[in-house]
Image (cartoon, rainbow, N blue to C red):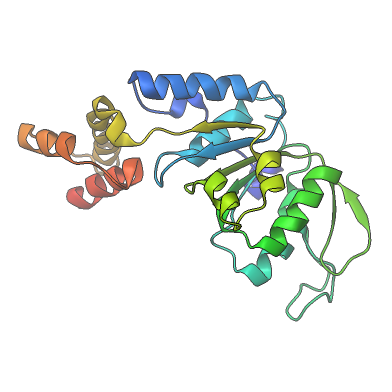
Length: 245
């Protein structure tokens, strides 16, 4: 049923590409976190695989048979974010479904909830999120019923959340509730030995799909190694795909 609903983590640690000491060390840290039940905060630049690590931690944990639910907090408008997180009762606002709806906390009960771009949530929602993490129960928008939830939180951001707390944009108490343990993903420029490994992997996938035998020339390899990749692995994948097309 979880597979039918899409509430599953597709990736595990074996799916993370890289032979560099930096990525191997990061994987080792993440594996140790999988054995814990504490909240995890994953820090890292865009395109460094934060959700890949979140899914891997879930699949290596004792919650692997439970749901894995992900929400990108930056992709939901502030007016709708609270109802997406906590659900809502019928008639609670214009456009609400007739029977109400579960939020991601209820959907993730017994499993893991991945809050991507956590640094983007507004202050008023931060207050509600902190209360849920402390009390381990939610109330749907427009409802009065208290619903217990058993959820492990993995949050991720490309922002310096500690600095955000200093500047008053992120609640300090919520930060420490989320960052019980934390880790940082490695940008591609800091593991240059993995650049061609990723490039060849994506090219092999395209060759299999289109039944071709395109390979990287030496000048192309040189260019790939020398570029700084500000968009990291995601940018590299897009470049390979775009060049192939």
